[in-house]
Length: 609
View 1 (tube, rainbow, N blue to C red):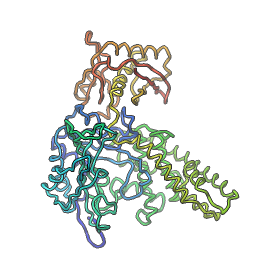
View 2: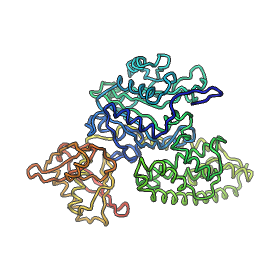
View 3: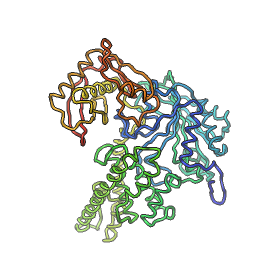
View 4: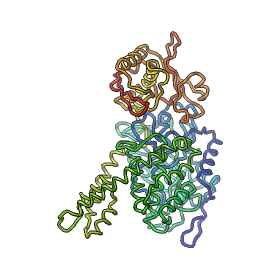
């Protein structure tokens, strides 16, 4: 029950995050959906994004028309990570890592069924007061028609017209990710918290706190063409997303995600380490939230085998951990603490995500190593500040450039620089610093947006060729080097393939030539690629390779490449695709590099022409 002033406002039944997840899955299973497992945070064969940031990402090939082995109706709880706006973390609802509830229709049901089920789930299953529900629909513009159909359906299920709001593309339109591709309107659901409106224009989408958005139904019904025009898709799709943390906060009766059952043990541990109390001071509460959020994210990223580094995923992880250390110092934690908090995260999530318990020791070890490394960096930053303090500066000012160097090179928050400057009678050019920081963030965000595009990855003709080529490459490596070879990872772009595999020593030039020759012989033999759908157990009994067993669902796709004349199997793998129809479509493969990337793991880079 929410309380604003002295007015109690009952919105829904009290429900924990796990109860919400169970109820959501059960609801859609009863309506003909099949549950699929959460995919890894690290996308497989998708160079367009560093991490999975939405439930639809693992389903890209199927949203584009490929048949899913589990059918046309799917439901899941998907792990997600978004760090484009990491500086916004610290309020009561924004997160980097989160769990996303989602259900999908792949060319099956559409707006009528989805909106009806949305209303039913919210008002019947969650017992949300229908009078507190507000919805938004696409208002239309000069290029795209108004979504009158969704508005009419909402009215029919019980939402009056005065609580249906028409918003523009920035609020109620999805896609396409690039210049062309699938796109369409969406409809979003908001809770009216009972708070007073901030002004006459206050409505869903306003950030004053009166309306909180928590569920989104996307209707992919158009294809945007090169000339900007829209044409109807032959097969329409539904893609939905409901955040577990935010919805749980609503159901548990408060407006703070960090007071939900999945966060409270983490918050209590931070309180015990710092001696501070969550909620008593605005800045202290912000610091506690950042530490709690970032440690949770770091645990999940580390559980995927990513380690801190200065590039791509490793850089994101390093940035998360170092922000934790910075804000821990701000709360006067004077000892190693990241692993202590991580243990709370592990205890909360290890039952649902076994990869966390399986990698527990690695997670704790990497956190400790990065914490030690950054603590020494902070010490070096203090010495750098001493140099600034002894300079003969007119007006005793820490310049914007100096403050930014302390921030960028040594991880000094501007607040620490200001405190140190104040102690020696210096001032800081904070306005200039903020301008430099803003420019830096804009450049960083532009770069990250290319990595977190949040949508349909590259399934072009050339990428599909590379994907099939990895199957042949693995088979050839197993024949030349031995059956101990197994895939440890892969990355495909439009320019090359990268394939990581288990092998204890460097592959010789002679062996590489033999591997390349064998792959090209299979390509030139015009072998067809056959696809079957079966259970994972049945696939393994048939001898199919499946190196990522924990990521597969009940039904899997098996791709077989064999000689039709002799029935000799060249490759049989469990895989999500996409693949060419015949090996001859690949072209000629050329291995351009072989190197070690870890203990017992080698990497091959190759191109096709």
